[in-house]
Image (cartoon, rainbow, N blue to C red):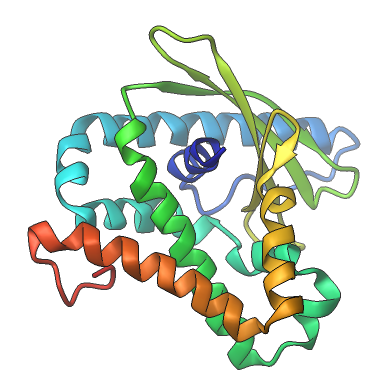
Length: 227
């Protein structure tokens, strides 16, 4: 299940603005078409980058983290994802310190997923299959098809949202009708309910530190943001 989430991370569009809402009655169709064009363009760009630099990214996690910063980090609304995992009402009650600490570890967790899944990349190609926008133009599902050489096509969806004139940003991913948030929220909430918010943060932090410290040992990257 982790692989489809990482696919979402790898191929999230890197444009800073996925189109503007039109004033015409058919604005939703126009917006969907523009989103599809923008996503398609950026999927090709990201795929080209991976194909050209895969060996370097495998050998140098710092280089791959730069790839994530360029193509992914700015367009992912990690706070909204964290809020969905914990529940809106509970997240609202947290202090700024608690929110910031947990959001930071959720972001590191998704970076870890991306690094873990890089080894599964084998030149797959990606294309936008469809875009569906809600009535208010604030949320949309982007359906992406992954084409592999010797396997059937795989379809997955990215949930993106926007507030007023803000850029579209990713919140969740869905594969075969199951979203990342729906899978992980039970674990998150159980730890918080039986222990504490700090226990959840420490749980994520330990997994992240264990993985990245082990990954960075062979290449002596101690002191970098990851290691």
